[in-house]
Length: 206
Image: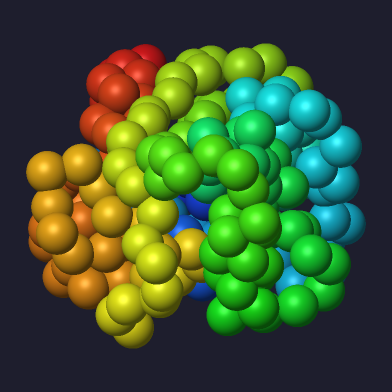
């Protein structure tokens, strides 16, 4: 993440996921803000993701962390939705299978698909992104979707989360095999970020 530059507003990227912070920092690199992740606030209460939709979870996090830090906060909630698994892991993507790593989570997804009578491997990554202020007001709410299919086995070491088993439409490689520049053109998070940029620039103009 870039060093703090004076006279630039600070916006919190409300996540402790280093991969998300890095990805969003690159996507927003040209915007006139200083972006900071939750790692800059070691004494902070975690905001529980108790909602049943990506949008509501993003709202909970954006408002909760904005109120705690006193900063405009950008939060996203994202995950993988697999058609053969009736949309799972969905909003539980980060918690799928309990407290295990994503290597194990991917194995569980692939195993569950093998047991399914549905041969369709279609899936999508979904991202809901919300901007909120310290007064608890939602300034913007957008989403982004990347359609694709589930690979038969993990491929590639890039990205994070379920990236090694997701093949975006129009590609033969998984997100785990694509380089950062390619992924940032088509990912669900990139598409949501592109939509919310105009709200960030409008905030800067106030």
